[in-house]
Image 1 (tube, one colour):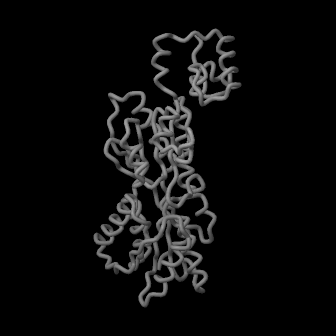
Image 2 (image 1 turned 90 degrees about the horizontal axis):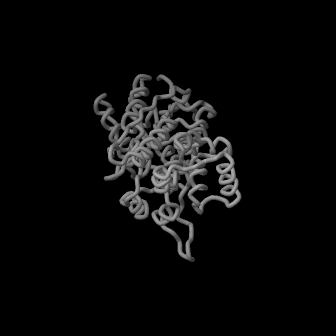
Image 3 (image 1 turned 120 degrees about the vertical axis):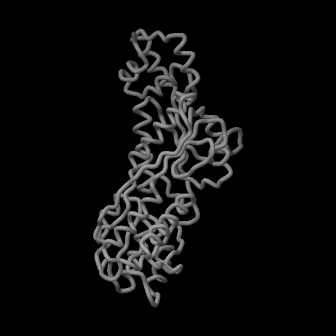
Length: 337
């Protein structure tokens, strides 16, 4: 018996696209729909009435929301890699993904994120890179639609978390092993991720009996080289400056690196530095950046796995939080003293 997967292989399109064509859904081109239907007829495809009834309840399309305050979205190495993990896993399980924004219009009126999701008839939504305090995002998470979040815990939604608490602890431990006792931390702006990292930083410093001054712990915007440049300048010009500076992310660390160079000093000669994320760019800096590498592929895979489990097995799938660990990459920017 010919299956949808057989038609998918014959047409060179995804299972989700075949399903949409055979169910006359509107978000597929007329030419593609006609080609798929013709191939199905040619191959002798006859849908089972029970399975067809079941399938019409699914669009085999997942929505992905990815915009944040920094508006870096897909341009940022970390999120791009997570999204690629979501995409590969979802497509392997027969689902397409569609990126969601709140700039779409219907009947002359701007659609909210939730309205966009309903208009597209998504089976579920992955929220990857957003301001989670945005009322429109809260509306999606509170809605009756399977939703999985990245690095944010919300009642009723499953979450996939990078080990932010453990990651910063590992960086501090590594700096300590290299002889550093005066360790500063430029953390990101207020967010659940930031809270976990700051808690981890303070806990490990207390456990190691490091007397870190309050002035060594300062905030800057994520992925903002200008703000980290300014914070770094204040730190390195202190009467008693730190010997090692940890940054909120790899991209932001570039601002600190440039600041140190522009002040006539070097890394790691004058100051050691480390980032967080493990984006590819960090390998090409001079010196190569010591950083905590997040397991982006697994983060993306887990998001897709969990979301599709909620869609296909709603009664068996429990809302939970999965934490994914990474590792410290020992670059040349952090050296012994």
